[in-house]
Image 1: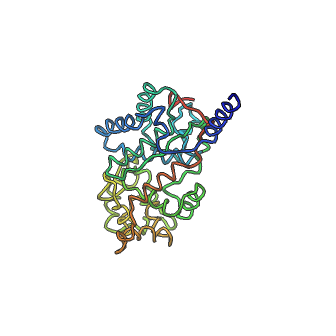
Image 2: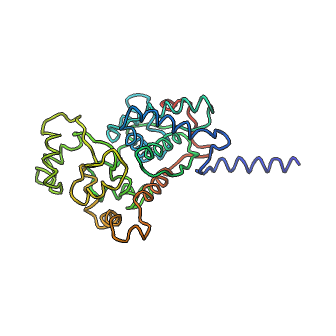
Image 3: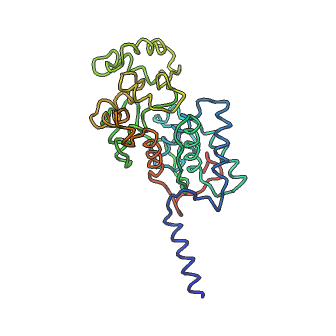
Length: 319
């Protein structure tokens, strides 16, 4: 009996140490975590309509540096990862802390900050009329945070070749690149538009891929030597709702960000964009929403810590 007991215990601990993400990871240890996180996101969204793209971007930026481990949440001085140049404009930290505090009161020391980030991103997408999908949980929080580790973040000024390479390094496909980087909701700052409007390489001037009817509007919002903090919609005509309008804008030269426009300059990514508008696409089961949901699940698996790896933080901003 003693031998059997130790075999059972060893097998249980071995399963934990290997660790795997799965839907319903907290069903016995913290069964109400998802409703609690969802309620917090809804409460914040009631007074902040821009919270959906903010939380979505937070999850993206977390996963692309050291994997989805909540490292971007740490605020341990000027060298903390969150202060990296590639994370400029990333926000939503207070929402995650608010959700974490409520979860801790209910289930202390059980749910990771990394999982809360992933759940909040899903709930934010749903609030923007995007697809709902099941979030795999079981991530552990990382124990390293350094801005130097965020030097290779995908950037709006990256060429399509560089973007493809960065996504491939994370195990993501060209389709994942299209659906995850095509900015279907949210706003951007004129700071990210200056070079595209007034000093585009090569030759200077404006990016020739911008539709001539859109260019005056962009220049009026972001005049040369103007306030670089002024914000403008990323998805022309549909910045508040999750839909495939951004892909139509990309096809028509109405992409606001250079990285979005570049998706139509590569044979493979262009074919992905066009696939959502084919005559037979609905009959072939081609769906931007479904592909986005699948890509989010894949992204959420990047270099995760599970089992005995990492830790469970009590406060998301501190080790």
